[in-house]
Image 1 (cartoon, rainbow over the protein chains, first blue to last red):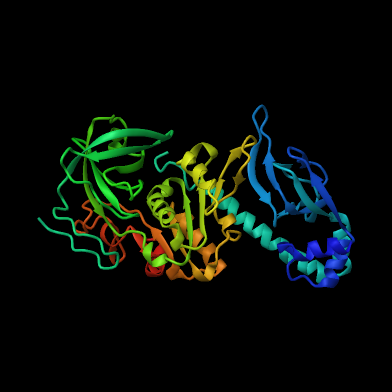
Image 2: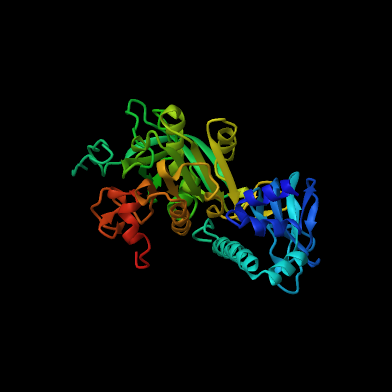
Length: 154
Length: 289
């Protein structure tokens, strides 16, 4: 547990979080490993967790019938994977698949939601951090939609 | 004939007859992407080579069709060969693509300002580019690698539309294999078969290994991409005067006479295309420009 606490507090996502709050998070956390090609979650499944990636790379993708998957973004060490655990109805909107051997810490969404309800200071800290992630991803998605490298005539 | 005066900022030589086109012969045609190609040009026998600095451009004339400004994308250390990478987007570039080895192309130049690489000595070098924006930055990378000991960390971040649209793929792979250079690639969209990064270049800037306090950033790509890239560089703490950008406008004469490429109080062909962002920021976000 002590090791998990250290890993969590050193991760960029939780940088600066009060040690008492990190200790609370540890109660919802566990280490996970995903082999290359393994699905971490799939679209439509209950979103019961999020992942703090320690090493490796993950593709967030969606499927198109009779075609290969479309990769929307990749996540790698230092990043967080998944925020559907925060938003009802708590279901994944995309697939996530390990591109290579990936080590992560998973935080149980239900457990964490409960702790955030009990301790609003923790809840506020978590919300601030996720808001930043959601805003960044929205901005990145908008840029992707602009197709800035597209042919100027096409 | 008017003579362009040397630009004191980058100490460029004046061109004796800046409106005079010189015939160059096509030595090689390289298909880079489905809509992008490179031409290797050599001067006519007995004619001197054309010297240039990284970031400059030439006016290329397809005889009987028209003239277009194209940045120089070869190795400035290789004298005698001129490389231009072009995207097929209009009448002239379409005609240019139909040319083959042995055909002639009119060349006048080089024009414009260059990447101020000598001023960056001792600093970390951050090259952020997207799409065909890698072409005008490639001479700079060649120069940096040839003088590697003069610089700190060297980081290249390149973004493309898809894995099929990665320009100079073999070159990037070669650079990526070096121990004294970091190359990061990302694409905006990909299929499940792609194992690299997916996401816009701005996503990766926060994690690039360079010292924001002592770095020089060179940015070239679509203007929207450059705008958001600069925002991320600012977030990292990079000073505006340590960021250099390459602008594109409708350049015609190449010597600041015709006014087609006017941007605020400057002419992109003469005062650019390479600008210090600190100098351009007042016009960079103006919608009318």
